[in-house]
Length: 316
Image (cartoon, rainbow, N blue to C red):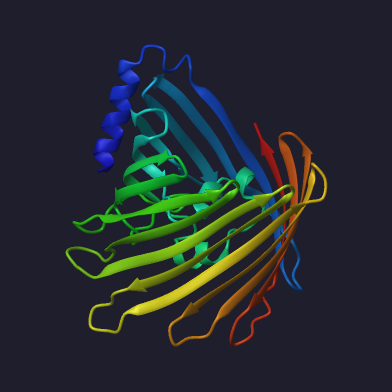
């Protein structure tokens, strides 16, 4: 599937005479400072990303991202998007995708997230931010939107950011998300995915099922997700776990906002891990954002690992 992705991009580039003239370039860089309770705060570059976008024709668009993080270079979402019916009714994405499970994938990019760190369930149940190579059929009709995909699947991490650049077995992971907007500014979503995750021809599967909610009212934004997960393990009981988060963001002014998020993760038969995240953000100018965050972690046995973070995000 990776070879198909490369061929499609090359064909589109060669067939579009004006593609490079119309290429849009943007990106961001962030400086991150973090320190656990009782320790000094250390500063360094977080992520540096350059994004590319081009429309080859009314029905074919390209977007790509090159990411530098932790001294490594990798790809972010890099894909072709084919409009099959109308502008939004049916489309087909092919390439390296930010996987549309739940809603956190919508804010993988640092400028979009508004907090310094992702939710606990994204870290522990979705590979820290699931990116994968494959195809995704997507679209929207009236108050319903959908994504249906077939990809390599979790289990073969590689690259910066964490992406499934290779496939460690002979089968694909399939899944999707359906979103419904019963009223304006309220969306309810349901997601499911399943597929083999072990090396070779093993048939044991990884699965995730989840629900999500997004609501906005004036200066207030609320969103949350609940996810249940299972990994089949050869010769042993299945590994089952669940987690959720709920996040409240309120704007005090056009530039100043506050964030509160609660999340937990719990393995079946094990102890619950909790995390409370308190954050402040200030949009200094249009392309510069300042953020601070305090993370209160709860686990058994108790570990003193609360985390303070500061971040400067510069977009261009």
